[in-house]
Length: 313
Image 1 (cartoon, rainbow, N blue to C red):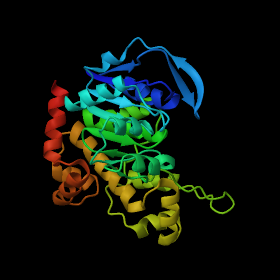
Image 2 (image 1 turned 90 degrees about the horizontal axis):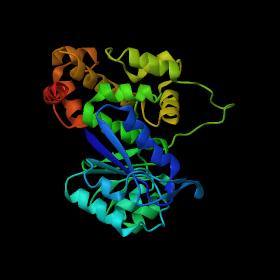
Image 3 (image 1 turned 135 degrees about the vertical axis):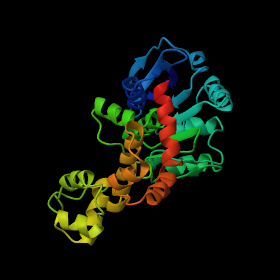
Image 4 (image 1 turned 180 degrees about the vertical axis):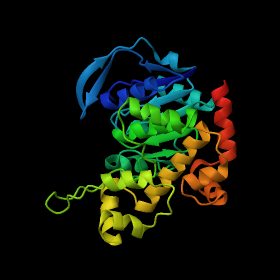
């Protein structure tokens, strides 16, 4: 059983706190502990919202495989005992993640130095100023640096937690978990933190049907012109509206979905790699291997072996 400890520090953002509890409790193979030193205040928009009293103390996080730090005020100094816990678990190899302004807690524990990280775009400049040894990227949903993971605000915490489920159990389990919590397909970490919402009288076109069509035609050699024709607009207009509504480009969105589908097929079927390459629109095993290595960090064959072994345990 993989133990996930969610630190409830005084002043914790209530919504941030509940995100990992909901996601990891909905996925198989996790024990979730909300760890607080005492009864603490939870906040919403910086104002006290309710109080939390947990059955678990900070010491119950000392054997956790993953520790998640929800947001608190960037100016708040966490208890030194909490910072010591994070340093201790990090030195022992535990996975440490933050949601939104929880990154400031990781910074105060000295865990951001030399790393690329993110937080809510509103306070990204403050994070960069307080921890100049870190490289703060204010534009992305989350950053996975291996042992240390950071996410942007609110909903980006959902994306990060599902990303960790996918790392632990594969794309199929992550997709099932997303369905349980009624969340749309997971966004990749590199997508923009926020997207433009044009005035309704200027742009009311909904790309939903086009996205569904792209998802249903991953096997086809789609071009930007093909997608624009389906949307009945110019390629330039498509690109503008696509980025405004999804935070990424049409071909990047398509590639992400193809890699995701390849992961699911490698986990759940015995199809040969060349067949999976064709089914997912990569054309050749070489092209699949290239994009798989870039996005997942391993080969399709090694990925399949990992999750087949995991399923046998």
